[in-house]
Length: 452
Image (cartoon, rainbow, N blue to C red; front, side):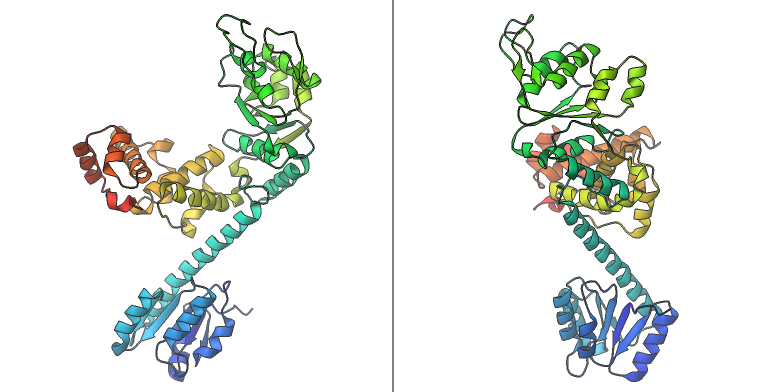
């Protein structure tokens, strides 16, 4: 089987071409050699996964001109220049102009192999990064919310696209952190209701004594403390979408009233006898089996069947591991923009560690990890493997280590948010200037690193 060349080597001396081709191929790096620059240019492309190695001094088009034309095809293409002793200053200037590296003649074969391999690793990361960006753009047809290339996520996107404009009520089932609200928002944003309100209610966060007033609204004097009329969440969703998160937490009394609203598409505010027609769509979300909850008496069976027109199941992250690099890359771009910090896409070994982790917190945990990586990663010598086991995520480290890591994270975030302004950072953290400087010195932080 012929393996496509991953190294193009350009030199006008036949014995140098032959020796270096043999050296590279013995090291497992398929190479193709050329005696002039003009011959290699037609073979270059943005998708070629290789490295260009060229002597600076060539007849016709020289190595520097070759590099310039290669970078016109792809600015990220790694070019290694081979130089004689008298051309070192030229090569240094070329590196400032975008050369990946240069090698001075004569050079040991180990140096050539090491630098080519390093450039190939860089090229692999660049192309992988570029491909992930393309996938993210392709996924944006359904908004930037439903990201993934796994079979489960492709099916979920297709189902959302089919359901979005039907107006049918939808039940979304998934573990904590899988993105149930994002699915609800995608249904809303790709429907005719997109220009009206998307009203989200976390049923588990509203006290039982307030849930009916929160959902249905009330008239003045409806109960003690009701001094004025209040429009409820359902009425506020007129023409739009009502998202009921953690619906399994809704008290049974409120479930009875909600069932009637869903059946009649009309509400009656607390303290009122007037039915008000409401045009709205309901998307309910739960992390439990509602039919099982109905069997134990904590959820009404008739409400379950009324909500369960269509059920969308969001798989946990551990069941769609192929989506992890794509999601990580998306969150990396978002975090870099938010914190104004640069962070490289991780190398294959670190990506493999991400793929091997079970992600009990699902996509939310992955997003939090990505933000830690941008804030505390390469700049502070933390690997992704260490950040996955970070004390903030519950790793078994000593209390002082956990406190220091948390403190460092807070200071880093404050510096990033204030773009290195010490005064704003002091205000955000509520500490004196000397204390801030002492802690910055302790953790090796500099305000210059965060200035835009």
